[in-house]
Amino acid sequence: MTLDPQTQFAVWEGSVEELRGLVSERAFTGETMILNMGPQHPSTHGVLRVVLELDGEQVISCIPDVGYLHTGIEKNMEYKTYEKSIVMTDRMDYLNPMGNGLVYCLAMEKLFELDVPMRAQIARVVLAELTRINSHLVWMGIGGLDLGVTSTMTYAFREREVLLDIFELVSGQRMMSTYFRPGGLWRDLPDEFEAAVQNVLDTFPAKIDDYDKIITQNPVFVDRTQGIGFINAEDAVAYGLTGAALRGSGVNWDIRKAMPYSSYETFEFDVPIGQHGDVYDRFIVRIAEMRQSLRIIEQGLKRLQKEKGPFRSGNRKYVPPPRAELGQSMEAVIHHFKLWTEGFRPPKGEVYVAIEGPRGELGCFLASDGSPNPMRVHFRTPSFVNLSALEKLSKNHMIADLVGIIGSIDIVLGDCDR
Amino acid sequence: MGVSSKLGNLGVVTTTLEDAVNWGRTRAMWPMLFGLACCAIEMMSSQAPYYDASRFGMELMRASPRQADLMIVAGRVSRKMAPVLRQLYDQMPEPKWVLAMGDCCSCGGVFNNYAIVQGVDEIVPVDVYVAGCPPRPEQLIHGFMTLHEKVKEMKWYEWAGK
Image 1 (cartoon, each protein chain N blue to C red):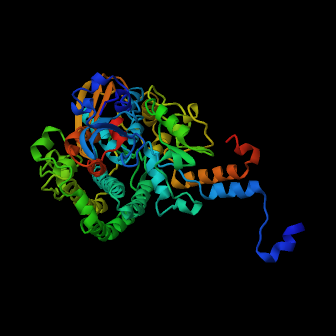
Image 2 (image 1 turned 90 degrees about the vertical axis):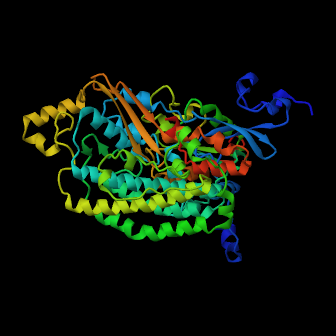
Image 3 (image 1 turned 30 degrees about the vertical axis):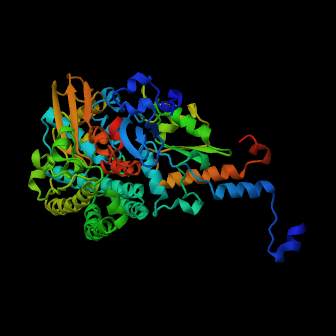
C-alpha cells in the first residue's frame, strides 16, 4: 500500500513533522489511520477535538486539542473589580457555578483576611453540595447517553430541575447564580429554602438507588465499562488527576478532608473510593459521592435551623452596607459609594486556594498589586488536568470505548478552556 | 365558501401549497446536536421531560449537519470555533435556519474580549435571537415558536433562496 500524505494527514493543520513523536511511526508508513473526532461530536461533552491514530478500531494514540471554548475569562477578570468579576467565574465551569464562586470568594477572603459568619459558611457548604449533585446528575445523564443508556438522561434532567429551582430560589438565576460574595452571601437564605432542601433530602435517596440499579444491573453497561480506561494509583497521582478520576483508582484524597475549607471539618462524611481504576469504578464513586453529599446537606440543614446569625461579614472596608442603613448613616453612604464606584483596595500579595469541585481540585491563584482590580487570576481547573491523562487511559482500547472514557473523566470544556 | 363547504363532509381540507409546506417544515424541524457552552445545558433541559421540546416536533437532535434543519448556536463562539461553525452551517442542506441562543452568541454578552466572536451573526445569518445568560428553557421554546411563526410566513418564491 502506498501512502498518500495528503489524505493521511488531511485532518492535521500543522506540518507533518510536528506529528513525529505524537503518533507512532506506523502512521508515516500508512499502516495506521489518522482520524479527526470533534469538535462537533455529541460524545465529547462540548467542543473537545481529539486527533486519533487508529489501527482498525484500536486507538494507538490520541491527541486532545483544546481551546475551542477559550473565553479569556482570566484576562477579563483583570479589568473588573474584585466583586464584579465573580460573575465571570460562574461561566467557567457551568455545571459547578456555586463551586467556582466559592473558590474565588475563598481566595479573596484569604487575601483580605476577611471573616465569614458561620451561617454563611454552612449555607455555602449546603449549596456547594447541591451543586455537586447537580453536576453529577448531568454527568450521569450524558455519560449514560454516550454508552447507550438513554433513560439516564431523562431521569437526570428531571431531578436536576428540582435543584435548579432551589438555586433560583436563593439567587434568582437557575445556573449563573453569583450568590457567594466576599464575606458571605449576597442575601440571606429565603424562608422557603429549608422546605425545598428537605424535599430533596426526602426524595433523592430512593432515586439515587434507582440510578445505581440502572447502571450496575445493566449488563451492557457493565460490559462496556469494566476493565476499560484503566489507570493505577501511581500513574493517577503522577498525571495529577484529582476528584473521582483519582479516587476511582483507590487513592484516598479529598480536599474537603485533607485541607478543609468553609467549615467542612465540622461535617461527618465518608470519601468513597474505588478499587480498580476503570471507567466502572469512577461511575460507582460518583454515585456514592451523591449519597455522601446528601449526608452533608442533611447535617447542614439542621445546623442552619439553629444558626440564625448574620449572613455576611460586617467589615465595611470590603462589604457594602445593607440598603436600610443608607437612609440613616452618612458613613454607610460613603462606604456604599466607595465600594460600588471604585471597589476596595486589598493588601498586596498572592494566595492560592483549592476546593474539591465535582470534577476534582479546583484551585484559584489570586495576585493583588493593591489596586481595585486583581492583577492576575488563574484557575487550576480539574478538567484540563484530567484531560491530560486521556491518551494514557484510551491507549489500545476500541474507539467505541473512547466515548465512555471521555465521559468517565467528566470534562467540562468551559472549565478546561476558560 | 366555495369548494370547502361542498367538500366539508368528505374530510378534505383545502389549503395553499405554501401553507402546507410551511406547516410541514415547522412540525418537524430537527435541530443539530451541537452545544458550545453553558446554553447547551439549558438546551438539553428543554429537550428533557420537564420542558419537552418534542411537543413542537423538535425532540430529534441530529448529530450530523446533513440531517439537520436548524442550528441552535448554544453558547459563546470563540475565534478558534468560528471556522468550524461556519463549515457546519455550510454542510447543512437547505432549507436551514439559525437560532442564536443566549447573549454571548447574540452580541458577545459579558465577554467583550479578544477570544470571543462578538455575535455569531458575523459569520452565519441568524433568524432568531434569544436573550438571556443562559436563557431559560421557556425562553428557548419561545424562540422556537417565533421561528415557526417566521417559517409559516414564508412565500414559495423564497424557498429557492432559503
